[in-house]
Each structure stands twice: as structure tokens, then as C-alpha cells.
Length: 150
Image 1 (tube, one colour):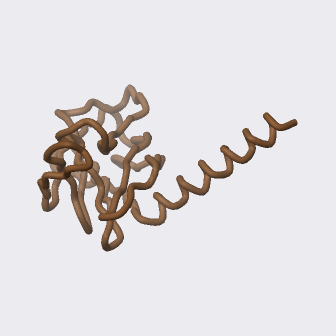
Image 2 (image 1 turned 180 degrees about the vertical axis):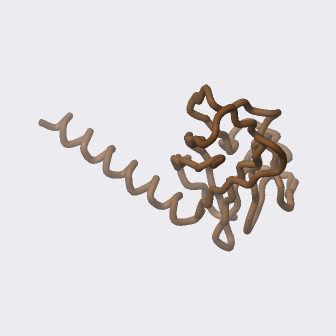
């Protein structure tokens, strides 16, 4: 009985923690055609004031970098890796033992894709972590599905 109650408590705390991270970052997802059968998928993070989200290349061990996992889709071919567009801040953080890289306010993550068919979706998830000057929230995940083509 005690083990069941403890497990339930841990699950509830984790759910509340994830919900807190999602309140500090709002995600928007879109695609735009840039050439014949070529699209830019734009994943935009808008971060509440006093918080920041980490780059895909954080620079040190410790903070969780922003990362993307895309669901396999035979109608899509990826061109290169996810690029970052925003004001990158590089700051020496004693707590992390070195220089960290992060964004405040807003950052766009851009992935180029080529479509092999007429219309499809790019689905996946983004994992990220937000911190402020006092604390970090547990890593969070947001799923997405973006219409491409058509």
C-alpha cells in the first residue's frame, strides 16, 4: 500500500513539474515553401520573461539541450540538421561549470525538408529545459504535427 501511494505521489509531482515547464514556453509550428518540393519547417519557442531555453549545443554537461525527434515519414527527406535563429547568449555559469548557450524571449528552430508526394505531415516531439536566475524546471516534451505540401 505504501509503495502504491509513493508511486502515485511521484507521478503527480512529475505531472505538475512538466506542466510548469509548458507554461514558461509556448510553441508554434509552421511550414513554408521555399522552392519546388522544398519546405522550411519552423518550430518557434516563445519564452516567458526571466526564463531561458537552452540551445541544441549547450556547451557543458548539465542542462538539457533542446532536441527534436521526428517521426519517420517515407514522403519526406531531411536536408541538413535543425538550424537555430535567434539571439544566442553565451554566459559563463558557475553552477554548470562553464559557458552555456541559451535563448531568451524567442528562438526559431528551422528544418529543411523535401517532399516526395503531394501532401503530408511532419510529426515529432521537442524536448527542452527552461531556467531562470534562481532555478531550473524539469525537462519537458511537446509533441507536434505540421502540415506540409498541398
